[in-house]
Image 1: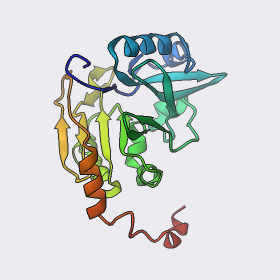
Image 2: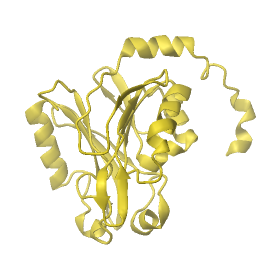
Image 3: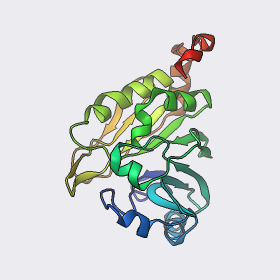
Image 4: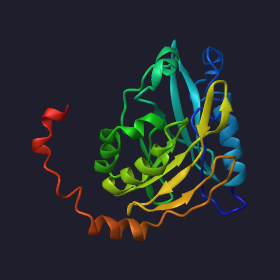
Length: 234
């Protein structure tokens, strides 16, 4: 990725361990500043490349489905804990996070992190839009038959919230699960800037701050909101 000119590498959900690993989640979970974090920081610094990766995070007796951002010099910039857990498997093995918006500054952009199922809740992405997120990073483990999320929902989220959304999915089969791939970068105009297939692939695409600014000027969604009407939604 660094040799190809990338400034940021986004890896999938539970990248360090695999997703469908059952009770091994508890055994393999590590603190946010554990040995694996040190190894990723060393790799990031050696290659001059920021990295976002998914992993099971241990904090005392609790285990979270987390994603961490390392800067290109190996500094830990942000750690996000998945707030919306999908299915019985996740609810049996993880504690849900309680902080919906986690952000950091990276290369002149405000970047935010969600994980997989989180992006399917419009409130989560709108929270990031209102907090000024420019690029939303979404490590994911999307499985069949839900490929419409990557194909349709992610570009819509980018458009309705006027941000870039990068969605990095797992591929192949783990146990009974088959992941859809289709990793995506969607722009604030709702256009897919890059799309992977259904096998392992390094996808490269640019985030253009000028396009982001022009799109936000032209699109009135956030300006035309009427928050006073939305209280009943909560």
